[in-house]
Image (cartoon, rainbow, N blue to C red; front, side, top):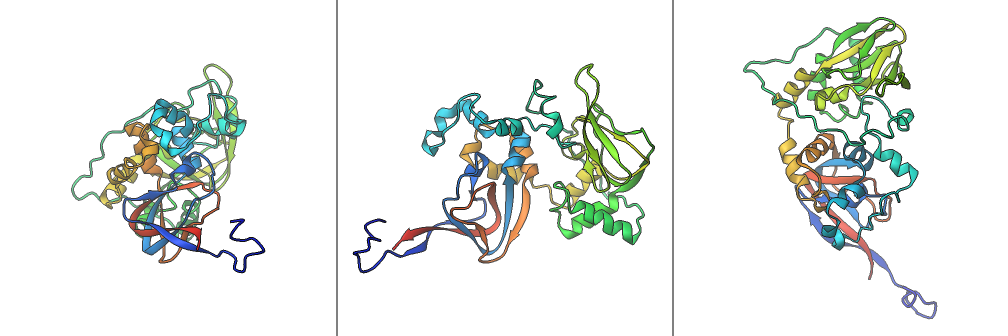
Length: 336
């Protein structure tokens, strides 16, 4: 570059974006972003309308822990990736806190220190297979137009449901039912089996966790729009915290079996296909089958139009992408 751009040269070097790779359905890019926010090495643009499956690094760490620790299971296999895996204990405090983010029913910020000595990675919980009976129709519960709009707005803020397509989203909204709770009543109780996902419509509630025989520790507070209990829909996991009403509360509740049957019946249950995609990613080889299944569930769907820039060379990377439908071209800026 110094020679090409030396002031004595009559013509300075020019740079241009050069096509270096074409990606099709099932291909992936940005997997190093699951490790850290390294700058993107290329620009990726959609070719025609493209559907992407996206996983944020923070979501990966909530589900599986720190990827550096996972790579240590067989680090010799990854020498060709030029990844410097830190020694045990080298991660900074912020990374250590992210590793310990195991609570999903409530934000864990105030709970991290309290749970510091507990197991950081959630145990595997398998749910029974879903059987959709012939002629089954998703239940509907009466709602006013205002309640429909309000519930739709709440769903738009939840990571679990906001990426549903319009038709499926409407079916799910219709299946929420009202549940009322009195002052001091538990909406969910730590250790109980999860059966409902809740969105708080009115009232307030506090979140508590308890370790052994220690007193309960308040870790969060919910107001209208607060959502909790998503593990009930995904894994049937036991409740990780207690949510207790601090005044009269009205909630919208979605039954686990109803949600899973809706997803099965609508043809949106594509977990097997997603796991197949994940099996192609060498950096994820050390994950167990169940860990990959959890990631497959956490993948968000995003649409890109023809020519849209998905990642830009030099930008900080936080997302990992799989092409579910369509294609992308990868470009690098190189001297001509």
